[in-house]
Image (tube, rainbow, N blue to C red; front, top):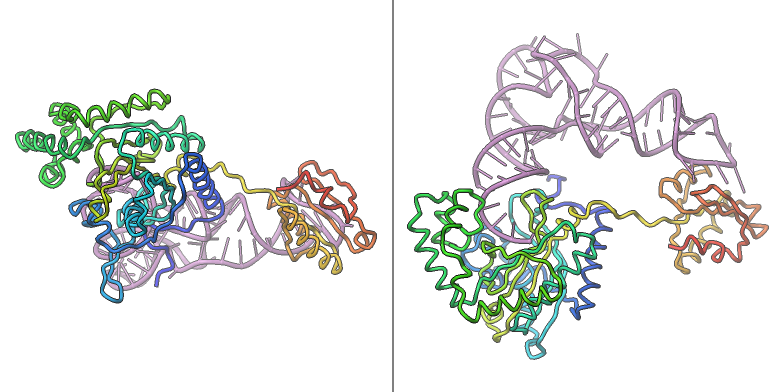
Length: 414
RNA sequence: GUGGGCGUAGCUCAGUUGGUUAGAGCGCCGGGUUGUGGUCCCGGAGGUCGGGGGUUCGAGACCCCUCGCUCACCCCA
């Protein structure tokens, strides 16, 4: 047995954990301001929940899912993303009648990919879903919510928003046909990767990173020219309302989505600071998803953001909270310190008790923990009902009445 | 799944054409200082040299396999 963590997984320790919490709490709070309610679905589902929604031919479904047989033979899959499970939960719980539904979620996802910077096999996402709003205002709300969260995380200057329209199914079919016809004519000039994509997933050729492919794509049919009346006006409305709200974006006609369930609006918040993993938050509209799962016709739009990538972008800026260190000197003081620590904690103070060592050791520990204050208490002092408070930054010491200790420490409250 | 770079102490790394007891800095523990932290001085602990096999009198170094990390492709958050 290896004691290494499984490839693509990692332990999240103190500062990282604090930053994770910061990100999820800001995302949850901000989502709350928009009326989004937290939902937690299971981290595994019947395999069909994902294969039917993401698309049987997509890479995630064909080679990246953690799929296993349950003891009774059912095929289960660790969720590779959050939307399908929520759609399933909406159907299971008969929630569609209460539409519009607004959900915020957070948690681990699993994809068997080759690990890379900002890419893990167990990754963590925050995301939102808005179900039951067919019009473009839903897209605008969801994108704006994402922008608010990124702003609150201090990433406003580090990301840019790109949007595109994938059209409705009708536009998509017409465009797909035109694109395939065009690409087949240039087949010999395409990269090997893209050649195979022409049959399997032709829209994927649009965002190829191969320079030769890019040139071919640039000279080919543009999706925007193939949008029918409905799709074009939908996209126009989305952009107009984003403009009204002052949400900056650029239209990227080659922006496509990896999962089959998307239609109309696709968008990504992108950074240049994370190497090849530039996408930090991505989403779009998925009107056919709930129906594809066997539920009612219920349109949806949402996004997901990778917590690891957000954390990487934010850098380490979380400094741990500063405790008050209790430093008893002597056996009687040690017992008293236990009671005092307990009482102070009930009052909301962050209190550290080291449990061993002489005064020098304990002071050293206080320094290492970056304590804001130390409370020194000797047996004789306790007997006299007094202790000494040392400000760890200034070094100033003052006597404090044991009965009024909480009041004297008020300025050091966590 | 494909390709490049890299695995030596908790961390960052050095280690000569293959040579005997594998080093440094930081951190950790202890002492100088048993009622006062950060600085300073002294001492100490800590290593299957990622793992396995091979070549050799001798391997941290060379060869093969394997695991992992990392960057890129693919795909995606």
